[in-house]
Length: 340
Image 1 (tube, one colour):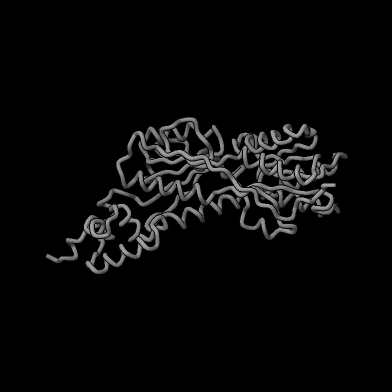
Image 2: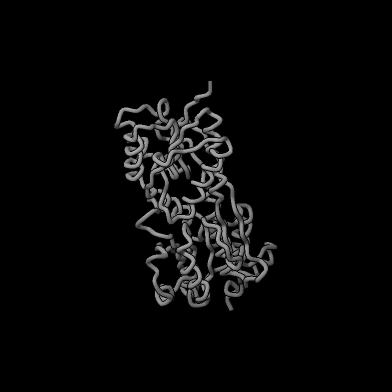
């Protein structure tokens, strides 16, 4: 018998003093394994002459090596920047053996459709309570499932989310410390939970400083640049211009800033801007955008790590992981100093 065929993942795991799951991830090039551990495992595998049967892998494991990532709605509210960021992070973290399928919960209308795609596991980037029905259906079908971005009420599903209330409250506090007292807000889609949290957090900071915001200076966008441009034009023609505008994502801030420049307003001297998300381009805007860094990379890494654990190990009822992560304030040059 060829000795190479006698070497298994468990053989390597025992010699490396790690789990067979870690060995599998290391040999598949996963970023979830520390470089030193990956190197040790690879060296052991090479020394033992380990040869995986790649053609038979799908049959042996009964896996399709397909992970479904579902957004709330791809046509409304999910900006191209956020979509690109999530997919990029997911591909960088996920084992190279896996492919991604991108869809929205609104398009996934039946359990039969989910079964037909034969997903190994599903990640939901949830923005709305409207996703709850889809989440329930996926759970009932027995798919390994992780919900990201929105804090859900149930505790039987791994859930990693972001504290948008605190993020927007902290960025409002910063603008107030810089001497601003008259604000405008460009909101995102009204059915998104992130929008509710960002608006409430911002207003909470104003209330703590006995500040109010005129309803005429609160406009609705859809998280895309064009909507930010349109909303800002409405604010500029209202006759009551704020000194600082909070755009509830960076993409709308881009459109809003361009509207100011097109109409002859100086940014940030006349009108300051705050964004949210800290997309890759934010630091290259002129002026650089002061914003809230949404830790998308962290929740994607946690989500994929958890999904892989669900696939590789028997889940324990009392081991469901949940975490709410606070965002970080990123100060650049788009908020002027109005302190006397």
